[in-house]
Length: 393
Ligand SMILES: [Zn+2]
Ligand SMILES: [Zn+2]
Image 1 (cartoon, rainbow, N blue to C red):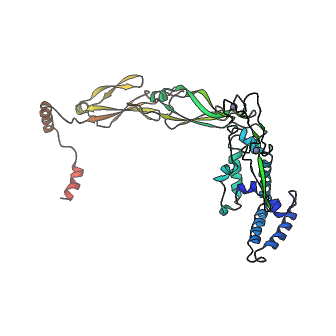
Image 2: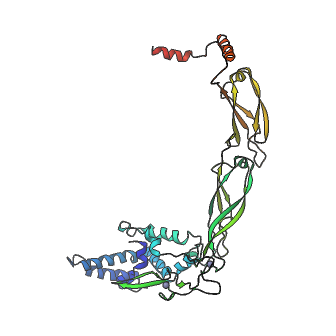
Image 3: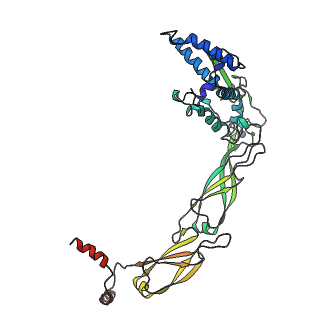
């Protein structure tokens, strides 16, 4: 049992009732047919067994008021050509060939999901409202689709804020043929195979199978002279450029919402939103920690011991920081207000991490001086470790 079954199978015919039949009539007819075809009464008769299954399947839908409503709705949508509307307009790339079996192929449940209540509704919403305008809302205004975009910003642009042109590509209706796919001056004509219905029907047993017309892909019309712009598809890829303002301090991974800058709405509906995912390219010097900028500055052992004044670059200048004598490696100095400046004027700091560098090689003179220094220096405070080391001999 799948949604495709619902389109193809005429459960009313299977139960031998009118479409307008009351639930009592349906129940009565089902009981009669089920009794007649029941395998207990027809041992070894595969035809009867098949009929019993058919009748049961039909009653499982028509005997349930909610499912019957959904079934009726779906059948009427297909019969009335709503699918054609959907294929041609309402946010879908106009006139894109479609095939119901493609649409339902992946979603159609196996027998395990038999009559699973959610299947149809989920599928329905994904087909008919996913595009921002579906058959169910075909006559009213429909909100345009949201659009997702990704933008990579330079580190400094992200810190200071920047306005960038953003080019978006999205499927749209061809302006040359207004989506009908026909060369200007010509019109699509009714499909000779389905006579404009978009659906062909064949009968098999107690079922009549309706399927989208293969000649016109269910559209009901065919284009004799194709629009040169869209080659008859009715849809083109449209490019539009927006200037997007990225506020100062925008961070890597942030998602910016620009209300109403998504795809335009249908029939007077509001436009969708544009969501821009921000990537910030790393800087070779600076890092970010919220509103603070970070930078690491190497210093010599002598500078750490004796103290020094350091001139450190900021994003837009320099700042001089005092390294006090006896500063340990890893100490973080703070240059206030030299971080990210927000719109409200508040600013983060520049955090300067001092990194005492050990030279890999020293000159003879330096070595001699260091050895003299070592003699004058008490050993490092390692007693707490030595006690543990002695325990292991
Ligand atoms: Zn056709
Ligand atoms: Zn066109």
